[in-house]
Each structure stands twice: as structure tokens, then as C-alpha cells.
Amino acid sequence: MRVGILGGGQLGWMTILEGRKLGFEFFVLNKDPKAPACKVADACFTPEQAETFLKSCDVITYEFEHIEQGLVEKVSHLLSPSAEVLKLKFSRIQEKSFYRKMGYPTAEFTFAKGEELYKKLVEFGLPAVVKAEKLGYDGKGQYLVESLFGMDEIFKNHSKSENFLVERRVNFLFEFSLIGVRSKRGDVRVYPMTINHHEKGVLLYNYTSSMHIKEAHNILTSLMEDLNIVGLLAVEFFFCQDGKVLINEMAPRPHNTGHYTLDGCYTSQFENLLRAIANLPLGSAKLKLPSGMVNLLGASIQDIDVEGLLSLEGIKLYWYGKEKRERRKMGHINIVANTQKEVEEKIKSVLYLTYQTQRV
Ligand code: AMP
Image (cartoon, rainbow, N blue to C red):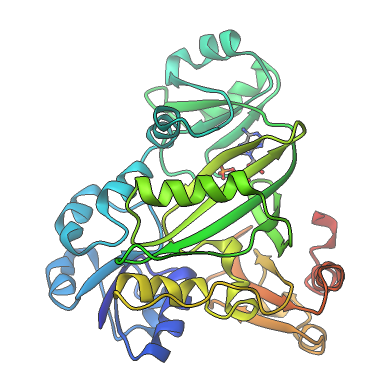
């Protein structure tokens, strides 16, 4: 099977490393040939070489969502999950409107065109979370507005012609996510839920929980059906004070909160993605042992205590080999242990050994 991947980041890198075991070949389309996935692919193509890339692939998937529309059209007949699903992710407004139309629960929201943001915020009420319609990820293009003075910050980074999503700030008890995989044959597996801790909009660590939130499970499986997903779908949720579950967002691709599946589950999210799009039987998504993950944000390998980390039992280091940038996801640590409590303790040790303790 010859698999094409749009995007060259760490999600593609892990997909390829997992897919090698299945004997698959991999072709990456990415601007930067030094990107992690390009280093382990059979060949890497630039967007200008899209035609040659296309000819090399039996099926194409993606590892990030911000892909140029023209390119998506060009490869859509081989794309899995489909171009229609990917297009929903081009605009936060479109995505949220889809949930509303289909009756899925989200935080209350409205939209605003740049110049009407002030008026919309006054009508909507504060505090609110303002999110730029396009290109937002890892807390980028996202602002908690507690007073109307806070709007200056937004227009430092955005033009008045941009559109914004305005959301009610959710006073959640915790955040969690669920990842599901659905094959061409319509078989479905759902990974255990993880509890996720973000720092300034970026995931810092997460761990598996034995909780089963039926409503979230139903939302995930129903979304996979509605969107006719062939591949992965990750859904991030808020668990509210009143016990209600709200969707924050979804991602139709491998997800950062599923990195633990490489070591904690019988079949990783990456392998199951490949099985799904190659029309093979899905693997078990069951947990072998309680697991967790810590992201290594904005660090170089010299900045972390590798010796100390690798001396801990049940710890695996994944280093992506990217150029260091502030708050960039540079690598992660997977953790497995006999109990959830032990996982949580190990997370604390890992945060300490990676000098990220102050962020908790
Ligand atoms: P996003 O980029 O939409 O995934 O948001 C990143 C993180 O920002 C989330 O995981 C939450 O921690 C926080 N966040 C986003 N939207 C809201 C909201 N409406 N209310 C409270 N926190 C939010």
C-alpha cells in the first residue's frame, strides 16, 4: 500500500514509523523537506510537485488541517478522511455551525466580522473567548476577553477584515477527549478517554481515565457516522460543572491526546488510521496499562534531563528533531504504569525533569 500524507509534522512521522511495520510505503507532501515526516518517508514532495506525489499514492491522508484548498481539490478522490470533512476544519465558524445544525452540544457562540467585533461582544456579554476564524491551533488566534479593553490585543494580530468566532467562556471541571477510528467497512473502535491539561491553549499533559462518559461516546460515534469518517476522529470536550458535556472541537486526524496509544494500547491511533484507510481489519483500541503523556514544549534536547528521564520505569521518549521555537511541540514522553495514580506521579516527575513543573 502506497500512502500519501499531506503535512510533514510529528503526526506524519509517527504514522510512518507505525506503518513501516505493516510494510507500507509513504510519500509526504510538505513545503519543508527537513520536516520530521520527510526524514522517514520514502520520498517527500513540495506542493509544486503535487502531480508526481499524486501518482505515487494509492490513498492519501493528512496530518494537519490547514491545507490549501486547491491542493485538497486535486487529491480529493484519494483523500481519507474525505475532503468534505477537511473543509469543515478550514473555518472555526463553519465547524461550530455544523454542530449547531446537527444538534450537537457546544458552548453558546456567535460570529463577528472584524469591525463589528466590539458591538457583538457588548451584545454577547463578557467574559468571552474570541477565536480567529482561520488558521487557529495550539491556542494561536485565540483570546480570552474579560474587558473590552482586551480587544486591542486582538487587532494587533488580526486585520479588521477577518471573521471571528465568539464563544461563551466555559467554566469547565475538566477537559477530556475521545478518539475513534472507523474503517471503510464501517467498523468502529473507540480509545479510552483521556483527561487533558492545557497551558495557554497548548496541551501540556494528559492521562487515561477509567471513566466512561456515555454521552461523549455517543457524540463521537454519531459524528463519525454523520461525517462518514474513514480514518480517525478526535473530539475534545469540556466537562461542565452541571455534568453537561460540550464539544470544543474535533480533528479528523491523529491527535496529540492519543500519543499515549503508541505504548498504552494494543493498537496505536497511527496504526489504526492506516488499517482504516487501507481497508484492513481494525486493531483493538483497548488499554494495556494506565497511560499518560507529557509534551516537551519549546525545549531543545539539551534542556531536558534525558539521563534522569530514561532512568524512570515505563517512560518512553519521542523526539521529533524540529527546530526549537518558543512553545513549539518538540517531542513528548509516553508513560505507562500499573495504576492511574502511579501515572499521575510519573507525570509530575517528568514535568520536573523537563523543567516544566512551574507550568502546572
Ligand atoms: P482550541 O484552540 O479551541 O482547542 O482551544 C484550546 C484551549 O483553550 C482549550 O483546550 C481550552 O483549554 C481553552 N478554551 C477554548 N475555548 C474555550 C471556551 N469557550 N471556554 C473556556 N476555555 C476554552
